[in-house]
Image (cartoon, rainbow, N blue to C red; front, side, top):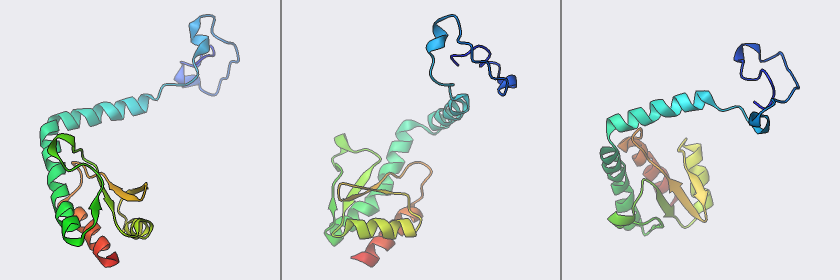
Length: 141
């Protein structure tokens, strides 16, 4: 965007190496307009669903995970107190690297962070998906 003519998206292959005469010459990137459009649509959908409803729903997805952790002695690293909870749940199983790879093989989206499995269920996840996480973890314990 620092060069003349770069805002004419119908002529992207007509490269003009002349810097703009004003402060726009210092622009480093083209803005990701397609990302803005997607984000606007996403925020609209989340607002329509309701932030409080989403928070309640994600927390219901945590409950079977918390019960399983308590029953199996797996440490829950993330805060469980209502005032400090988020949509993220981190579990620290005995063998976190093995658990992580087993979950990835089962097509569970998660990450391995500081010896814990990080799960971040949201409004698009289901209770069945969380059960799949526990099934995989049960096979390891």
